Image 1: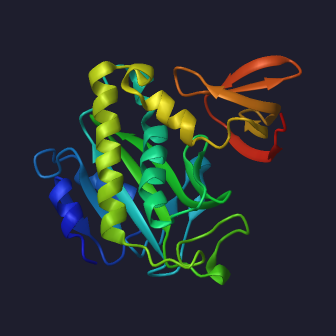
Image 2: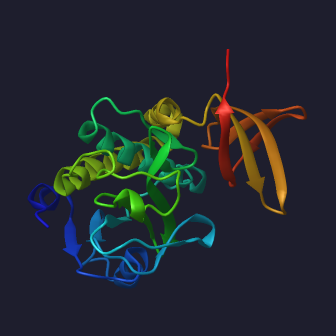
Length: 256
């Protein structure tokens, strides 16, 4: 695919005709820091063994989606600040998707799924590597309605748009690199502006949610805000609880 703009932004861009998992492949390359510096990118439109959060498998027909993995080396020193990286990726991808879908409601479902009109168009998986973080994204680009994996998914094609992959990738890289740089410089998502940006994009806030927690526990209540560590604060009958990890389902909008 034509990626001239993205190649001007990224340190390195390698496009593979087919790969099992771009995250796994980039992890293998990442040991060579000189050859694969900060903001190196590995991508394909045919990923055969993709992985999502909670060890879910992710597959798509050949040419129907774009799998992108980005290597981040310039990271915040504080591990707590690094917890914001998946949210930063979600915001950056939502900001990249929105201009190509004018008028659409593009948001982030906590912690990092990108939704259009409440339906998932992109999933994100961030994984730690030696002295780096690999951020993988899977964007539904040319996927038809019959190819969508679940009824709650969507794609550029289903929305009647031909995705501009070069623009999408370059806009995403600019946004992601800028947010991570701000986080590294300040060490604080509030000071860097990431907290405000994520809160503004997050459609989970203000919704009734059902959260599946470790240990087969379920938390039901209203998602009211993101805390300073990027955790989702849920208010239930038992009070307020900050959720660091969990599978979230939007139940219904909150009125008032």
